Image (cartoon, rainbow, N blue to C red):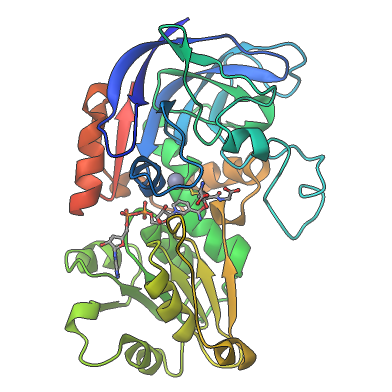
Length: 369
Ligand code: NAD
Ligand code: AHE
Ligand code: ZN
């Protein structure tokens, strides 16, 4: 079938709206009509050329919501008409990773995802007869996409697509990092570096679990008022701190953060996040994605003296199990989503979403089809 898609032809080039060919779903795959998709900083990261797995030409996008409109042979868990959120972290419930309660990183299709193809090694997308790469196994910057069955979470039908698409990455990543990866306890002191589409969800996740101090760190002074709405208690602009940021944060949290979260993708900030964690027990969670060739460093003494450095992908959430629950939290008013979606636009204006992100004007932009 012909679908409308935003095609990335190369790094640092604006997306181009094209009519592309989408082959129907094969064994174990479903065809999804995408109703809405968010634009995440990870899309911008790949488009910048810094992603070692970045492949072009491709149809990007990984934060969508839509309806199943076709099923391939052998599909058991989904049917036409089901509402779904595509999962860049699938959940096969059979692989060694899915069977280990210590991780959410299902590896059933990770290799082909990284190579920009479906699990059978081929692409369903093409333009004028030339194949296009899939992106993160989801390719939601198109009005239809094909997904492996294990990469679609079935959600309730009364949830609005233009809101819950954000649960396909940003909301789950931020709240999940608090709830699933870190297990933040009530009364904890938390420091969140980067108050964008992810960091604000860490902030609201920390509020939800009853954290005490929730310190937000961002270079953009406009983020103070924004983050306070979601539960931030103290704002720190590194440009306004005299002297080193780390001792300032250690002092502000009464000895260090019980939990810190890096939501930027800056390796220097990752070090600050680790070093502001409390001696003896502080945990620092890396969420931000850093570019090819970048490395983190600290004095090993920081770890010897009881700090833990860990990372979180998709908030540690198991997509098919946890995403429907997070949709319920939204529908029950336990978490905010709508107020974080500051801009909506049609597909033809998708490049504006990237501009708004880079200028710091948006929290999240959502494209509706
Ligand atoms: P965003 O652009 O919406 O927000 C980034 C924020 O960081 C902005 O508010 C910006 O002002 C602030 N910032 C930038 N440099 C800073 C600095 N040096 N000090 C303090 N603040 C600074 O981005 P986002 O969509 O929230 O994504 C954040 C990061 O999380 C990206 O690296 C993205 O790729 C990554 N991410 C990771 C996962 C995962 O599963 N691990 C999922 C989604 C996104
Ligand atoms: N291709 C990138 C990987 C970037 C990365 O870490 N991605 C996160 C999701 S970001 C969503 O906005 C993730 O899930 N990582 C686990 C995985 O298996 O990719 C690179 O740097 O190589
Ligand atoms: Zn994302």
